[in-house]
Length: 137
Image (cartoon, rainbow, N blue to C red; front, top):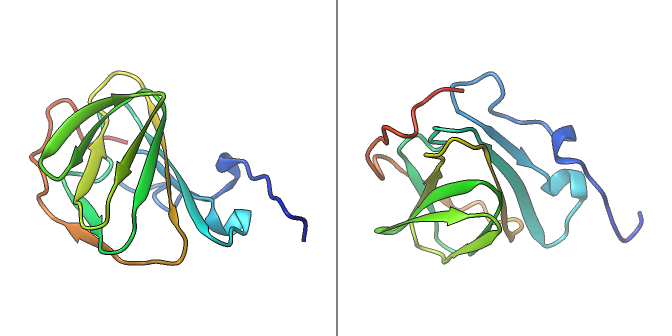
């Protein structure tokens, strides 16, 4: 195997295709054959709450969210911020986080973390529904 890999995100399956979850969640980790990193492309259509009011946290994993396109509303702990591309959001282990697209343009963010830790914990009712992020696919 060569010391590199090239993978088109659109060639990787989206497990939420055909569901009520708005947007796409394309895990590229296996397709890339990464040894140390986990990489996921998250696309959030206009006026959509990808996590649908929930949040999540990791007990050991630090994550980077690279905002590549659009403006996303992030909640990290109690802080809510609008983050416009190009930008990066770092979230420490133990910090509850979520994001939604309250705008008129699609959003693309890349989640990058260490590979192999499956310590995600879902947090129900993390924040109230947003009238600007309705639940449609």
